[in-house]
Length: 141
Image 1 (tube, rainbow, N blue to C red):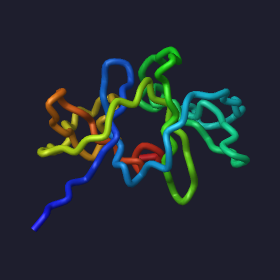
Image 2 (image 1 turned 30 degrees about the vertical axis):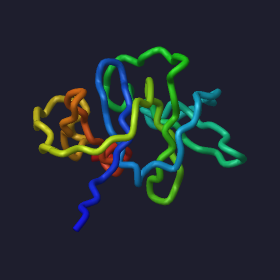
Image 3 (image 1 turned 180 degrees about the vertical axis):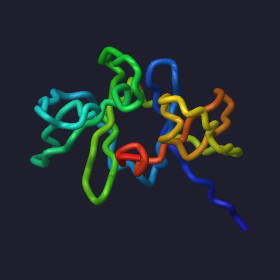
């Protein structure tokens, strides 16, 4: 019997690495012009026009409450599906597709450091990677 493990896309934000379940991702696009939207949630960077569809774009830095990292040539927008709508997430870089042999629960620190948005911590040969939960990332909780 073959066991198929979940696959994840590993991204980088500053010195931290996070993973998105590959099932949550629609596509990964290069950075493009983001139009700011007044009176939106603080973590919404703005919107982009993705093939004629207006897609909100989230700043992971703002969502995690950390200083924004500068946009670089490796910066990408990871377009995920949330409540049947496409939503973009800015990351500093997309590193690779991987799976994890061991996933531990996230450490509950009560600090606003992003662990409340994680399903767990995956162990890889490159170190530890926070596995993000899209529903918690965009939800109010």
